[in-house]
Amino acid sequence: VQGSQGIALHCGFLPQGLRNGQGAVSTAAGPQPSVGGRKRRRPHLLKVRETSRAVRASWSPLQRQVGGKSTNMGEKAAMSIDFSQWDADCEAAFEVALPPRWEFRDRAWGSPGVWRAFPEAVSLDINALARRGQRQGNISFGGCELVVDLQDLVAVPTDQYSVPRMLRKSVRTPHSNKRALRQLYLQYAEELPPGDHPAGADGIAGEKLLRLFKDLEVDPATDVAALALSAACSATEMGVFRRREFICGCASLEIDSIEGLREKMSELRENVLSRKTLPEVYAYTFGVALDAPSKVLPLDEAAQYWALLLHDWPLREVFCDWASRHMKGKAINRDLWMMVLKLATEVPADLSTYDENPAW
Figure 1: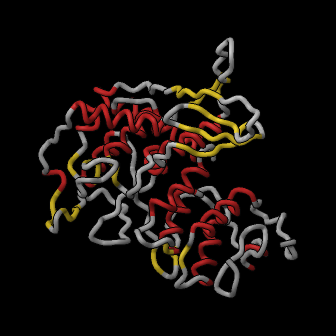
Figure 2: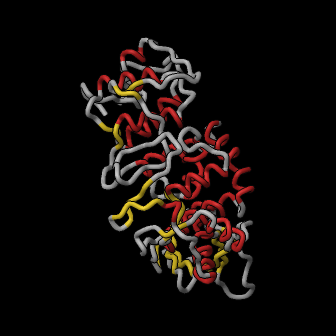
Figure 3: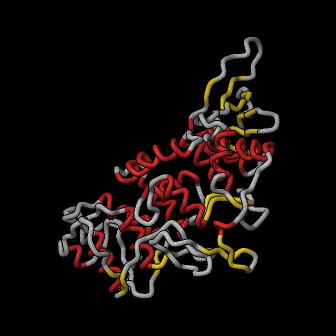
């Protein structure tokens, strides 16, 4: 992003204050800096639907609008889910959490041959075809192109002289007990609109989500583990774990009890802080933090999430101060959001790699 009110970060133009090494910032805990003259609030995993951009930092009970009527979610009666429906949801969620691997063998005369696994990238391409509901599609493997037929389970090379390959799917089973997982989910779940949501007509939200995090000993206002769990569930709404999303997250973490999930929270936290999973969680955060149909994130909210995800970036506060002065009224799009991650993780704090005359 270039211009007098923009920034170009990708090893190019940097704020003058940063270029001169001004404003070395301590990462010690202290008062939160202001953005655009306003006191910055800490980011919160939970958003109140009545206020489109509210990001709370307290544990006060939340109200949601259900059918035009404000309802305290903690007062809802316990719900139940049919076992057959639960099993079907588990099968669908397990396949998302642990995508199946695909194997092939040559269809030729004589010996049937040995089943061999496709490379991970090829299996991902075939799974993508299946998710889109396509019967046929093209994939690349071993320098040639194959036409995959998922109904007949065969892959036919486009080269007419090549031998067709038979396909089979190898399903991976997570170490999570369906019945125990159902019992865990029902402790916190309740009906949520809309009733035809593809991830389930119920989920964990509002006060019950707060109770879940309390049982996990995690403060969603200040602990990056909350965002990491949301990313593991691939939750599409901030502060809501729909049924299939919650099952998917538990399956990927291979847990089926509150005790097991509590133990996993430290691992999720450490993986982000050590930057092992930071790129994935960081990229996920931008999408889930948006309020549809908006495709940009207000600068003040972006600064809150940077404080949570990039807590150890020495130049974070001086960068946010510069942005608040030079980007008033501007918002952060996905490209700029990802450029900030590059700046924070690939450029040294002394900016010794900065080039005022880069080759574009």
